[in-house]
Image (tube, rainbow, N blue to C red):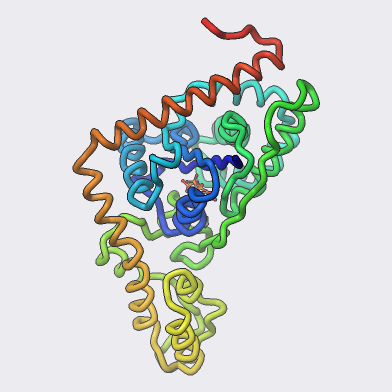
Length: 329
Ligand code: AQP
């Protein structure tokens, strides 16, 4: 069976609409078709040096959010990256076939270095190597991602090819499954919706908070008064309507915007209705799961045990191929 691997960082207490539309929503659908391995990638999150207690709490809450959004532990593996030590082990081995020139080309490293000027650490630089190990460890054939991760996936394929050149065929070369919403912009209307940028709507936020955030979201800058006609093509609110509003209603909004028949406030209110229709059931399920931490911990423990079994088998082949001792002790 084709196998999916995908991960999400516990850098906040859940995920945002960009993660949902660009990743998690697809994960839920892919469960019908693929053998799925989903991972809360806490080792990756260490690159921004989170407070330890906050990191631990984020892992728990992100797991709840994923379950509430529809990740089904009966059908998919869900676990925490640091609970399977082989991720770090394989990352080291793959790092030894990764070329510095390739890592130097990564735009995410450049962006994150600018964002974290006081902490440009080696983990940020070698992030794509650990990501390749995450994928290869489960011999994933497909990796669903947003546009921001495509460059890393190309490098993952290159690293795997180099490993094969030196040590022989060991892993599948993973294919990208690009999401239907590859790059959701943040409320600033300019940059990618991102946890570290405070330009996002969180999937677990209550309706009032979402409304407050939408009120200040950037629209068409030419539309200063309600009587000014707008251009939906340059408006991020219009973009978001594509995911949350029916086609019929969208036609009405489009016509209303270009003829100044509808104001931005009403347009945002319709979007708010669409967003909360998606987020409220997830928030309700999350509240129920929060009341049952034992269940959440059991899901993660079972996920980690199954993940370890796969990882150990892969590492057996990697040790054999590279000449490391068998590591059976
Ligand atoms: N704005 C986005 N539009 C579409 N897809 C997105 N993804 C993230 N942001 C968008 C996709 O979500 C998955 C998980 O992402 P992640 O949490 O591992 O890290 P990220 O891509 O670095 O997300 P953020 O929000 O930008 O986190 P921070 O700010 O903490 O670095 C990935 O598949 C990603 O493509």
